[in-house]
Length: 109
Length: 115
Image 1 (cartoon, each protein chain N blue to C red):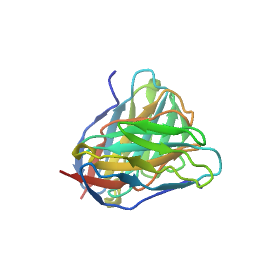
Image 2: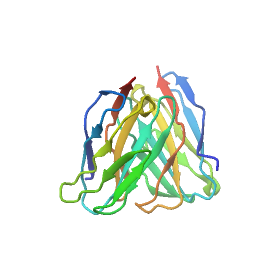
Image 3: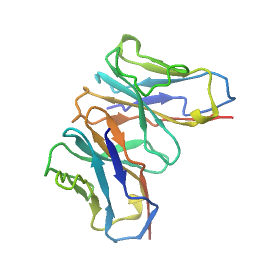
């Protein structure tokens, strides 16, 4: 069945550092790919998405490219801020939304 | 635009008791989902409704869990009787339709602790 594997955390960074969270997937069809974020004390919210191969999703300085050849959707941000501290979930939707386990990111001033 | 509403936000019960959660989706959203999120894991789909019909309940433990979506709007999820392993956050989400490209919008969740 469909599955998502994402980089284990926790990840701790200093402000203005480069962030990468790896995500790979297994799917039988051609899924849409998503990154959701959960800020402390808040609900899950969509960060970005890509619906077909080679699409790039972007939002709030974050980017991820749908790579069908490597079945990956890695999340990147060039310069993180303290406000980016959150749990990040990679997910795919083929016939239902399947999530990775989440990666906790802490950014220190 | 109002988001997905859920209540209660927190619930503590004894094992073998029953509990119910309520969800009000974003206005106009035909598809409603219930997820279970155990600590340290990603959310897992329990049930999906399209209007007031069930699309997928393959992961719902039907011996103890039930859900309904009367009139195609609000939904309730019930657990009876609860077990210790049901301790989790129960998330409700909605989307305009059930296409795999659609964004699902999540509510704040109900945190359940079973003692």
